Length: 179
Length: 148
Image (tube, rainbow over all chains, first blue to last red; front, side, top):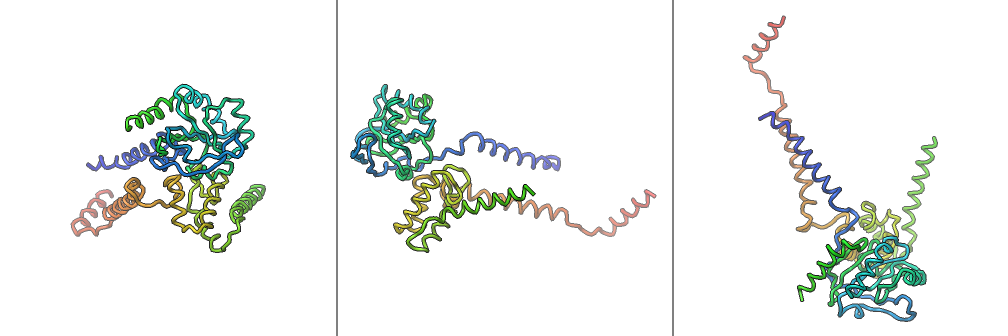
């Protein structure tokens, strides 16, 4: 009996070690659970990239299921995911709206000319204030917004083939099933 | 010596960094104090364990600007906290409220403390010296005598 009790500290340590191991490895601590899932995409009224004087509002966004992708020319991961975003826009016909985040608009236009433009249009958020409104803390971030303008899914980091297959496609299928 | 100079330079640099957030002039001096307190208890979403006050990340700068704007618009401290929490989740609050989803965060530390207190108390009881009875004393004396 007393012998067995000697092992209690070791058992406690083992349990603690398991928890810490899982805590450090299972989940990327940089990835925050989004607070905005199932909430309406916020109101906005912002200029459209490359169209002087033109503005986009939330009303332009609703009515159709869309991906809203936050990107910038200073963001290397945005370039890395650009191919996959273009593929999604071309092959699935899903509407992709860009938010050009804390960027130089003329440079952004050049970037799109060079790398291709999968976006229906781009909203310009030079100050980053709209980014705060939708809880952006690093580019790229991608939202799936349903036809009612409700945010259904959010991806922080690049959208790649795996993310498309394992997360975005099922999220879209779930929306499809709801209808 | 060099090390000391370096340490002092770092300390001075930190002070300069801390004063950078005071650069805002508020329309009302009371707001500046609330602003400072709020920034120290809000966490930068990008930097794991830095407050908005101490972080140099661009997102922290944007959020400081947001907090300042909300205060100038007449928001209460709670409204500012809720505004950021709605957008960035509990992560931004260094002092999150108690909810069904985060109960372990609040319950586990007191429970561990309780267990520790019980263990320490029990060990204390076990180790308390109990005076020997007369018979035991004689036994000890006999045993010690045997050794000689």
